Image (tube, rainbow, N blue to C red; front, side, top):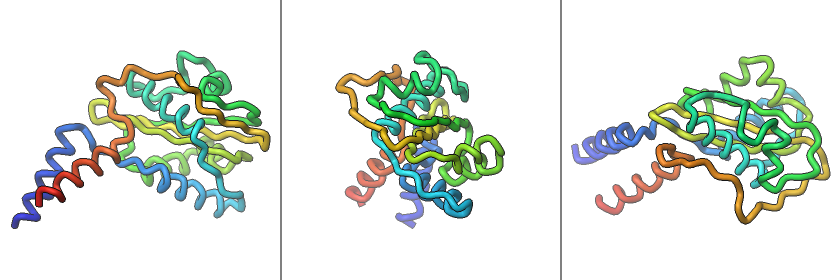
Length: 184
């Protein structure tokens, strides 16, 4: 009975803080790489600079409550540069809102011809991000091609005022679960 009530408590707590979506970049990368493998494409490699840029785009979408490729920094090339990325080949981006997990958003993109083409395109690098606002998750995948890519994380990267945005809620789930385990 005690464990059941603890589970109910955690679920209610997660609902209260609008932590209803789960984002695990390694899981999402594995899902995308499986799609690429099925299409005879090599695996993508996660890149820290592109991860920061993708998270920025998700935070921006959450701030304006809209799934968009637009940004105060302009087009995708222009948006990647402030995050220390240079030597890029081709670039592409997938954005979405409302999906509750890596599996559901990747499946949505897989079933959309343009998004699917981005996932199986001739890219080498990937960055992913997700942010929540008012219970709505905003997702971003950014793809970069080229063999001369350099990534130098800036000391002062662009940030979004995220006072009402939850970035990467999996961290919150981990913290809450850890606290509950300590209390048990």
